[in-house]
Structure formats: structure tokens, C-alpha cells
Length: 197
Image (cartoon, rainbow, N blue to C red; front, side, top):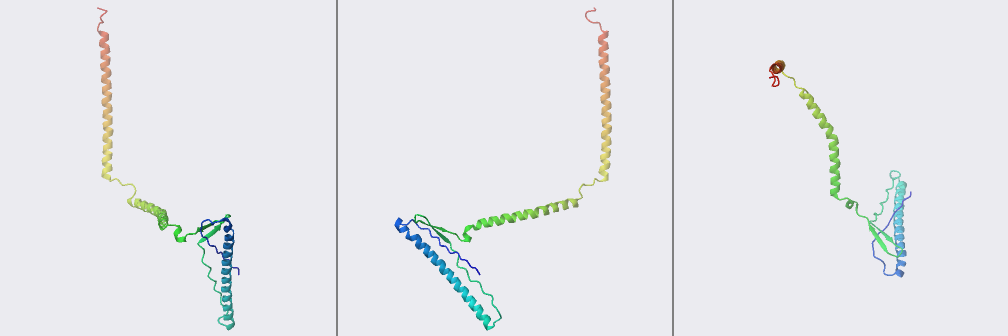
């Protein structure tokens, strides 16, 4: 069984006071971090050993055969990381809680957006189908009653008769105009002109 742990502490601090004093500080910080990691590893190993001893003693006493060991609880995740520069300057970077990364209003807006998109995707085809069903029920084109169709036929015949009569009238007018112009031309030819007198 291989269990790995990762422990890191980040603390933002200002520059060290002098360059000479800056040299021991990184070593001390490195040794304390290593010591803390070793202590966490030892604690985890001790916890595993205790669980193994408990399961062995339970198996020896005959209580229901082998008992599955309970995995140890991991150490809490660090929320800060410390970086030490070449000149001894220490920089701390903090990790915010997962609840603080995204504001609740942004989460609400994104949920509302996706619900709206789902409603549109599902509702639009349903609305179209409902509209088509209503069109089919209305019967499509309306049927014209027979009385109205008879009246329309009679009106159409009357308009055709009026068109024929208007054509006859215009033909008569053209004929009359032609006769008058011919009589005028004949009268001009019959009258003596001013030079023949």
C-alpha cells in the first residue's frame, strides 16, 4: 500500500532584515517543513499499524473472519503556500475556499441561463406542433356557401355584358369621329380657296 502526503504552508512575509540573516532562514524553514512532513508521515504510519494490529487481533479471536481496515483520514489540505526567493524574500500565496471562488449570483445566473435554453429547446417544437394542430382543426380553407357562389357567377356575367356594351359604344364613337373627319376633308376640297377667286 502506497500512501503519499503533500504538506505545504504558504505565508506571505516581507523581506528579511539583512542578507546575512537571510541565509539561515531558508534552511530553517526547509528543515521545519521537512520535519513537519516526516511527523505527518510517522503519524499516518502509526495509524495504519494500529489498524493492522486491530484487524489481526480480531482475526485471531475469531470474530467474523478478517475485518477490512478503515482507511486513515488524510491530513487537512493546506490553504497557503510559502515561496522563498534567492535573496531570502518570502512570498505567501493563499488559496481561497471553494465557496469563495465563484459568487453565488454568478451561479444563479448560469443556472437560469441553462434552464431557459432547455425550456426553449423543448418548448419551441411543442408550440409549433400545437399551432399546426389548431390549423388542421380549423379546416384550412373556408367553404363558400352556394348562394354566395351563385351571386358571384351572376355578377361576373353582368360585368362581362357591361364590357361588351362599352366596347360597342367605343366602336360607334370611333366610327362617328371618322365620318366627321371625312366630311370636313370633303368640305375643304369643295370650297374655293382664296387664290382661285
